[in-house]
Image (cartoon, rainbow, N blue to C red):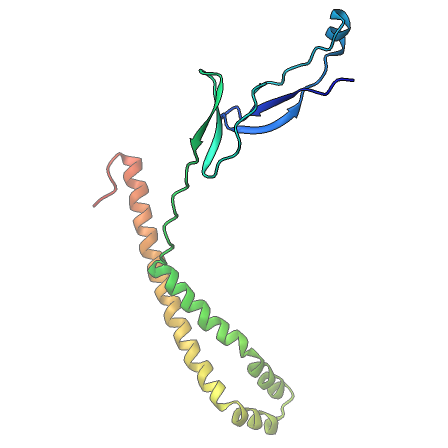
Length: 176
């Protein structure tokens, strides 16, 4: 039995080398002509590509019917993310919200004492967590301040986007 011949395929969009594949024997044509006839896959050649080369693609030049090296395209570096004022305000709002969430157990203990009408336990908790309770009060004020700032910035952004959309809709440039 003869060795299966190879074909060398390229990508049909980029023409870059994709794979070495075994060709398939055509049983009907082989029987008709009395020797092996091998099918040729689409987007392929019998010419093997050159060795891999750092920084280059092996590209099939259809006009010259040969492989050539083409320098790989480098993707441009993405611009670093720069948070907007709205992003920073949201982060601050969430930061204070998380601080409150992390200390909610204090409120829960105090509510349990109130529900149980255990004034002694409530007083003990007030003393035990006096610093944290004062901190929570400050955090609530800060969270509310940042929530208001977020609302202002979102309103400004909405007004700007609405003006742009209206400008596009009426054919103007969206500027006042």
